[in-house]
Length: 276
Image (tube, rainbow, N blue to C red; front, side):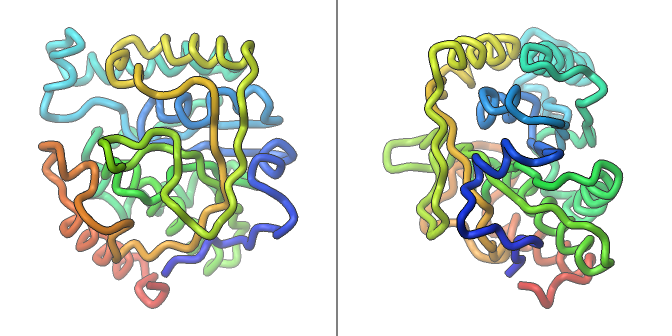
């Protein structure tokens, strides 16, 4: 079990803490996850940075060709441009957008390396709070990002360095009728709900529309609400929920059993196995 490195104050909800923080780093698996999860929140943050784990371009070229690109790197560069355009609407310039440039759908195969690189980023930026994905089996890159953020915090804490508190933005997971979008799996941790004003909805919709290559994927996500919570303690060696995971429904070369094997191996490599 990896505990969040900093205990969350019991009398402060995640939304309040995020808005009051001196510096927040959003760690998102893909360009566009930040907009879906926290696009309306972003302009209200005092000193935000966004760190993308992947470049948004899978190796198999299916998504790239569907979007009209013949080369993977052309697709990756387009997704970066889309992200910069979207975040400009929220007031973030390119200097506040970082990327680890792991190939989309491949983060699971780099968990230890990814955790160390995320820890290095936290050491450089010194965020008070990190906002990232929950561990819910929605996408292997989402789960890998959650793993890396929690592992990075544990590594910093062990070394005596400053470790940030961890908050989560609702993403998606497998529900009873397909994808459950912008809601969390049930947890004992109370969530904070941000109901978007009409102006906030309009701005978030314009940010989403900047991601033109993802128009079909993003269309079903609601534009009127965002949900946040303090990150619970996760056992990344156990399934996030019973039954089939959402990403097991797709041909992405990953299933839950293999992902958890990779997580165990990464925890051993990082010296964090005793924390499970």
